[in-house]
Image 1 (tube, rainbow, N blue to C red):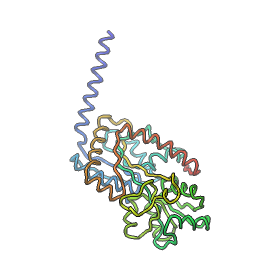
Image 2: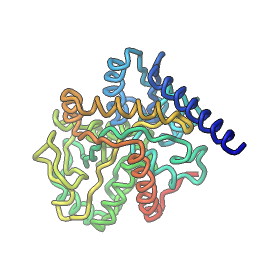
Image 3: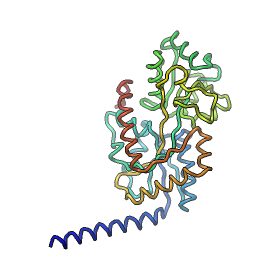
Length: 324
């Protein structure tokens, strides 16, 4: 009897695996939504559109980018968390939203790890500290010197409370021993616009969201947050080489699905994304945005997300940032 039961269970498992594999081979058979939990024009939106175009070409099915901004990424992320786990609604997000919000918000309608299946990382790209074109500071050292001489007189904008832009400002304040006034916005684009208009003195912005403004001298770049300089702006010094050697923030962007997605479909999407990231034209697209492809398996991405949730938990606690 036991042998018969074992045979039945084994047959059932094999049948389920075969069905899952068949579904993966057929996927996708219709339109796929890539949900971006940030506003259009930012780094996440830029990467989603570049990847979406390539996936549509590879799959032979339309891929639509859907911006669902609000509450620091919570609105769009929650939408995907509650979507059907069939692979047709996917989340394209970044470290700042997926890893930071877990400790920033007192109550979240989802769990950043348990309610998602990490599928594949896309790229890493740092942030740039910018000031207006008419600002007195032309270097990071001059900026810090002026801030030290004028505590609480200089301001910096961010994409919102607890965003990477915000926490980078808090990290710089702590490292440099300066006092700056934080001005939160509903998205990085609005903060950048007010730096250009001289309504705030500075801001940290992801390279994709601001590099064109830097290259056209609409804003002045002072330093980059990664430990190494970036190829798209090789003359721009790092914050580390400006006297703060341990300063290194280089966030990732990635694609996730609702929990419950078939492992076979998750692996297919991951494999297709990896294939795209290895193509010379996609590498070039990312390079122009100051980004470097980051290739990982679903398992490695899950480990990375878990690690970064804990990393940013400490930064959030030290900053005192919280959202009710």
